[in-house]
Length: 241
Image: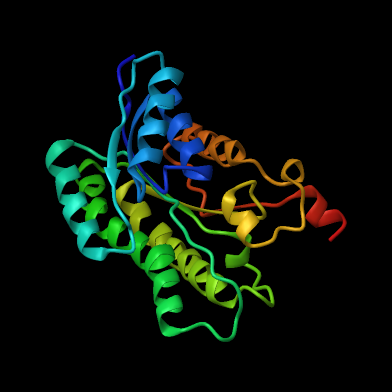
């Protein structure tokens, strides 16, 4: 298999990011995987190699995206090592409960990871895409970035911001041939859902692989088809909660 190109995936060590990294590798892209935990990255890298029968060998970048200096350093390394970046998936995220009582440190941490880090990575990577007049940016937001819930003020603030960033870039970058899509899922069967006390059973939630299937569909569209936003909801949430 000849790789189709390179795909940066943040938060690739588990959950949605893991599913996307493996799925993009199956599609023929080389995942450039970012996560805080080296051991998780190494495990996903092994899964990628196994899933592609050794045709794709991902690159691992242990990094806390909340550290903005590290983002600039790693992005520079990626630009020097790889001739092109075809896909950027801003998936890394953190949850913090509540709308009142959060400390400045809590608020800064959530905003840094969920909003500022995607902003900075886009700033670093988009020039490579503009040069080639192609590329696709996927921002993984949340249904909480469209509908604010009573106990999600800090988290929703960050995800509303990501939706706004995506909409602005969707309009700005389309003229350069770059697609920007924000994906807003409801409850996804991940560790974060456990942390946020999801009312749904694991099998009642969206699965991480569903997000990858959404990306697969979007990548299959013609260059002229631009999709600004995709909302994915849980059936039970729609019908019963």
